[in-house]
Image 1 (cartoon, helix red, strand yellow):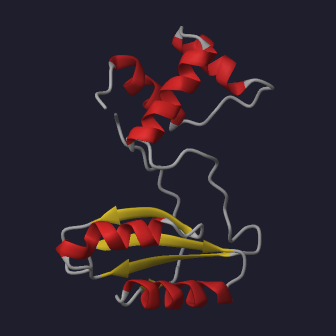
Image 2 (image 1 turned 180 degrees about the vertical axis):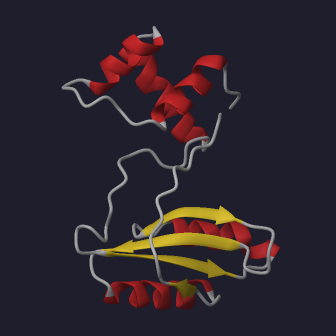
Length: 149
């Protein structure tokens, strides 16, 4: 999929959040000067093509009594796509990124309870054949992460 100017503006705008109104996509469409149907179709097309891998609210699992954990794996290049598919299929996984490092797959686990972090990591280790290393949070910093489209 090739992004046009409107797609890029839409992606950049979505990173600022949706308007808190009864019809957020209609408000967003008005902001962008396009129809609500066009906004929804563009989001759907970007999701289907993989340009957008995740679209939805971001909840603070820890604030709701759950847990987060940064995890990493060393995955051989030949297996990377297969392992990534297995890891991304888990509902507890978010923010899966490829890095140029021995630990080349990094992702975040978010679970309802603290003890589930280890259970999910062990399950992924067994399923993929590669050890999931867990790096629990020691301190929290709020950094606004934004990717310009």
